Length: 377
Image 1: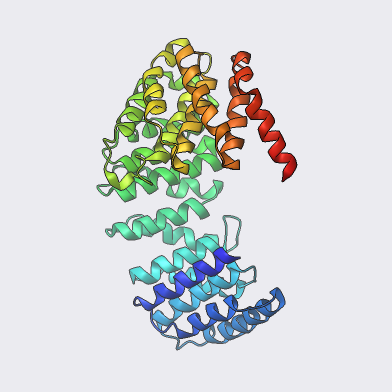
Image 2: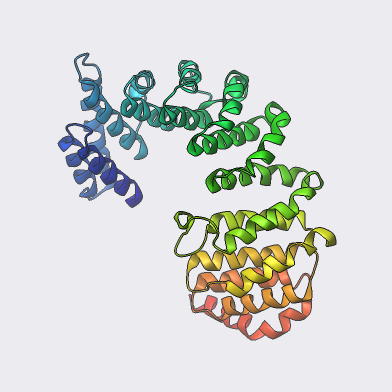
């Protein structure tokens, strides 16, 4: 609930930056934040929805004011109330020529309805038109909506345009096109099975964001058939090495860690490709060792990378040096004062002892300590 209130405050503050009159929205957010019970909150939202019904029915509402009314509808639905009477207004706003209003319309539609909703058919034609726009921001908004709203039956209607956008000069468009194709694959694998080579090509994209987005559909494809992607092991290892060596722009850093989410996805992929494959695993040992040596245990994201590295080592063809490094990192987790890290340590230890049961012996006391801690909670 607190997260919803925070988002509401951010929307309200955003409306001060040129979204028109917003005092009513600010008052709404304030009153909800001060509500002393769920019943009181429900009464506030019910009054707000009655007010919005009257305002939306007024044909003379200024377009910019309509934008704020839609955002207030979004906020009401976020709090669990039915604002279906306003859904058609969100659909209408996706047709607007004004970029801020169109993007607001797409945002609201994507939150209000799904692929099974009766209003989707009214949005598909708009998405098709906007995918051909010269304004890349309009194209991005349409791709985002397509990922949410285009169901299996409508995929063929937009698929050719989305594929063409993989070669768009703007990296933001290419990234969202990859994400849209991934979503189509999740909904109907047969619809995009002939486009697998496009994901391989985007792995070599000059923009790290596009490359990182491509890892998600490739991971799903690799889970289905690892043998079809064994030839990419060296490429994945080289990418992971470049990321770990901080060759990516610092804009991809998170808490001083270089592109950690890309690292984690790559480690997941390598774990699948290296499973039971000595040759493929042999390409991975060096970069995995580097990650263990440079690992940062001072931050949550650093520990997340190290944990995923342990998971990878426990899945690929066993190597004594890698197992030793993984066991050492696991020991640090188990000795931590953080219950979360202790849990990670227990989980990591469970993975490692399946490969080498002797690893458990040196951590017996730590495991007992964790059990005693659990008993006191």
